[in-house]
Length: 262
Image 1 (tube, one colour):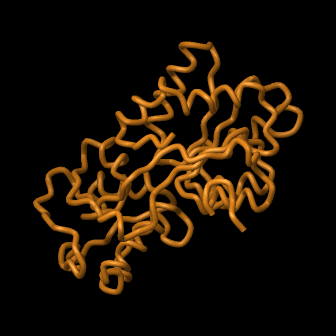
Image 2: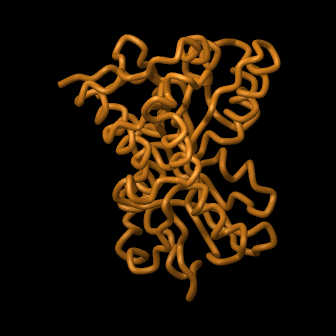
């Protein structure tokens, strides 16, 4: 069935858990902040946009960042979020199929790319192409990636490596992280020689460099859909959603390397 944008709960971020506690039950009625659940890769851009919105309106959204999969599962379990911004279409579709978003508010907000990264001082060079020798580039190290089963960045990365016929050579050398920012940190801290993250994540960390970008035809389009949740009640949430789609937010998204779609 066609959905609005296209067709681990156990490891949720601490920040998300605290928002759930603060916003659940009777306390939810007392909060004046719209609660936003957003993919971890959006942190820099959304923090800037939220600060700008607060400066203009005096309103301050409470934003929880984690893997899209973890956040979607939280919403399914009853977490009182007012808005969800996913790093892929699948997790937004997952919530729509369960009547947990407001379909009329759903749209595609941003696009991104995935890249191969190394530590800033690394001498590694590579051209990503079918059959490129990623295993040799790793040596005895591991490839940092977000969870390849559930987390969008990991799923995109695995799809690209499979399309390039490289996955079998590195499948046993993956260091899987709970979200893309955790994968980024593994490379930034020198715990993994290479990693696959979003272009925007690489741009946000001065301790890493982009080795090369993955061809966009090797994986599904990287699209970030946005929607209000069906259970959301905060009256400021629609205004913040509109602001995220506005010309005022666009340059702050683009500053972090996103492509704005609407």
